[in-house]
Length: 382
Length: 126
Image (cartoon, rainbow over all chains, first blue to last red):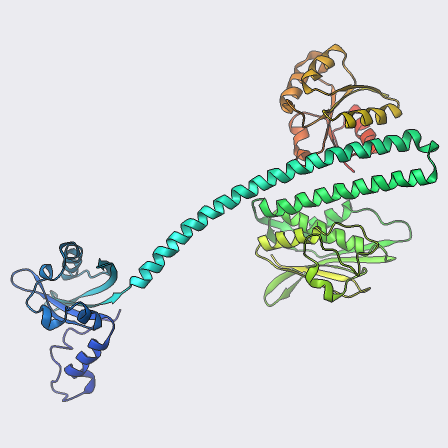
């Protein structure tokens, strides 16, 4: 805060005549129009503090204008508890160390900015300053604190609910897989022990039973992953997305004879991400790229990065069947599969929902561009 | 061909798994209750124990510790099989020789058994 001259009110109209900037009545009327209080006080011989100036709309509201409080010491002006709060602060200012402080009066809050005024001998001759009402700020601060407390309580509850959900999903997926295993194992017994005796229709039915089992097992796996992508704690570390993509690419099935898959994976794709969760992101995106380009004789899958508006954008691109951009909004919704391109491809419709959740938990964004028959590109930021 | 003890609390899984193993020429015993495993192993040690990870009353690490503490069973091949996704890191930690995820492909199970019996730790799923 700029230091005020100690003389500006005491020596108003001197040598320079009537400069409107230093005309006392004019300055006084300006001060009286302020919503705040501007004050000046001194210590008298009795050692008590008296006001020589106390103006502004607040002073008026509390009937504490200069004339009203003339010759009344601080102790006589305020209720005892207010005086007890004000006195040490003013005494401190008179010792040459003014500092901001807030006090309460009739349920309202006032911030004081006292400053010592030094005489030529270096002694404090007066304390000047201003007072602002900060009731609305204090109340807002109190309600923010209250909201924060409630919020952290909600966060704790949410974390507990997530842990419960996680345990529930794990237990449900285990319990769903148990009958599935019984179905699949018995189907295999039938295939192996009775296969020769079955008709072609019987053998085909059995194959379909086993395909459905695999599909359901995949579904269980992906639901569990979707649930974990929400509840697992985020532990970020530098991850080389390129080498992760190369590892994941090796886990994908080899293309059948007559078909080739070309992998183009950039170097230097190091990102700050949760290694487990980002693995699920790449697994899903690469798996999709592989799947939807599987009808190309020469499939090409590219993993790289670009810079867009100063942000690093990672992408997975394929030259597969692509999709119609009008279907783009539904791509990342759980259980929603594209009508145009999903025909003839196995899938659960959960993978991209998982990708979106994980990317969002990293504070990033995911989107896709494509056109029918001309491949798709999935972009994400972290 | 090996002598295999299969332990699972689900009777359907137990029966079908036993059939799949018998079809491959193995001699199979089955057990529905985890509490009877140690006695059965002591009475008539098989070549391999195929043990479900989640059964009522089963403390898997404790069971494997007690098996390994038996002089005749210290080197028994133990292959775990589980329907739980979380068991991935469990098997080597508890001292088993391999893990197969349910549902399983009979051929995968056979490969895992072969590797276990050949003394190689194995992790298989389809």
